[in-house]
Length: 418
Image (cartoon, rainbow, N blue to C red):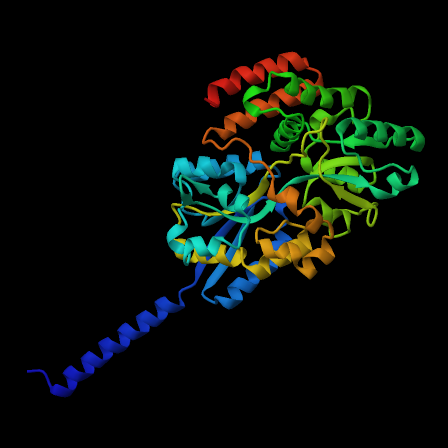
């Protein structure tokens, strides 16, 4: 027969063991693996992640970086996620990838993790919300939004009493005049035409600037856009190696003082002002303007930016979603804007004193950002991008004529954009 004291002792020990086990589970550390591109400046994000882990002691964050371009990062993520690998919890994806990741079942829908989703998202720019939404479900929260602008050398335009060009034709005239006067090897206009995503944007922006549409590239507007790139190289306004220039190549060349004008994204501004691992020769001498147009059309820029998404195969979805909400919070968005010149996804920050002190052009260019145009939204976007960038690069390199490149582009796009 059991002694009453012994029975009570056993019960107490079992209760204590259960309590200790529960406490141990509560203290169990969760490690979130976060993937981002090497060009997305992990050094700016690391202190932010550190603040999150300090506020959440049971969470650790491990950054994994890779791929210097959107294409290379996508290749890596595609390999990992196609294998249903849970090793990555959170990743950054280009805004153009959301529909593809949603269709493949790789990104976790975020709707159920957000408090009062519709009210919560009202503070964000509509374009940023739409970029993360597919068929009514939210698959991504924007780390930052983006748009392309025209960067120019204020000191050189002042020196030669030239105004900021409103049209592309005026840009060539001004660039040519300054090149001749300056002598040496200064570039008139630096753009990207390597077979990368930035080249797709450059082409679409000139196509739109002439009133054209991506479904009708083999047109007068398409010929005007692609012909402008080719002629810029032939006339030596732009570098002979333009077909090999990538986005960050453009940033570095302009930052080194090698160009009068250049197309680039918002991140370039912080680099130009000295918040950069590379030396800058243009600090204080850079202006930012909307991209030029053809004729009397409106300026047009591509909607850019990157989305935070949660791996659908992650074992830490709730903790990952909590991290995403932290990364789009007001304070974090402000810090990214101040330190990295990233365009915030929260409307209110375009009137924020700290943000505007670091990026005076944000307020004036807010209408441009708000009206940035999306690239074709389709799960087949990787193929759309490949068709455009390869043909544009080939034409700029001189391995295809403008007419042949446009005909090939139209033929292949017709099969995808039905």
